[in-house]
Length: 420
Image (cartoon, rainbow, N blue to C red; front, side, top):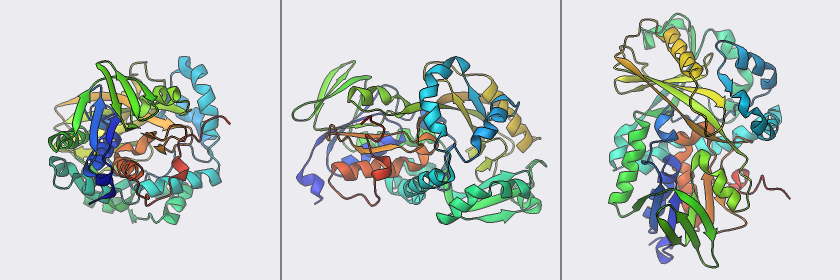
């Protein structure tokens, strides 16, 4: 019998993306009474629209050394993958300036090392979470390939690859002949690849999270469809106010992704969180599919096979949570796919955009609030939410069930952005 079963608690997890669902399921397995609260259908937001990668190598933050020199070209060039809603800039600046200040070589190395701890066993963590459930069918272990126009482009990324090698991530070079043997339909633009083993992808991210949430409910967990307005610590436990009433629990996990700041601030914490808006474009019944996910380096997007469909996902746009999607990012993804597969045929396309939760240091907030120990934070995973979700949920379960996590949670500590 686990320690948790000697100390059964009532726990609410707010947010049913991959992080929240994973936390809820691990806590249920620990013997707690768990309620998963979500205003939308589980897995229907960012966990639905991502690129589907289980990306162990995704340890590099967006802000790399020298980014400030490249940013104007990325913003104003026709094929630049960075977009900004200029009307949002005054609100963004207090977050953006310290975000860009994280780009020194030393600091990037620290961030990469912290991200690697969350990602190094990502495939195994997904399998451990989903094994024996209907969600297991969506996990596809395998390779990923970073595509470059030539080997010079790969060498120009030497700083990032040297960091990855220091963290135990290395691969195999592929020349044009290797790429064609691997994928005869690939366009002539790409003449060099770098293949990484022991990665994988989720063949339908939305269905994967939906199936995990359904399994959680079938095994005794509770799913409450509600919009949470407030989380208030009590002398004993926590009171949650939602649009259907109130709920009192012993512990709460806040895992609302980009919408978590509001609740964090009510609890006296600065989340320093922004929406890094992402886009995807799906080609339904595509005539060509990559044999494994491609990370297309010159377009800053991922091309992932999902059943009979091809999904292109990526782009970085800063514009807040309320503005609607822009047209240019989808046009950019379409140009990227035309270069990858010039002869591609398909039935039709489907567009999506959503909100990645990004902190100013590119690291999530994971663990208990130092102000209110009955409340845990689990948000801020930027591009790595799908990859790191199962392990992040497991770490939260460790904290609540009073086990010592197998990694040091200090880099992700709640309260690190609070004013002295």
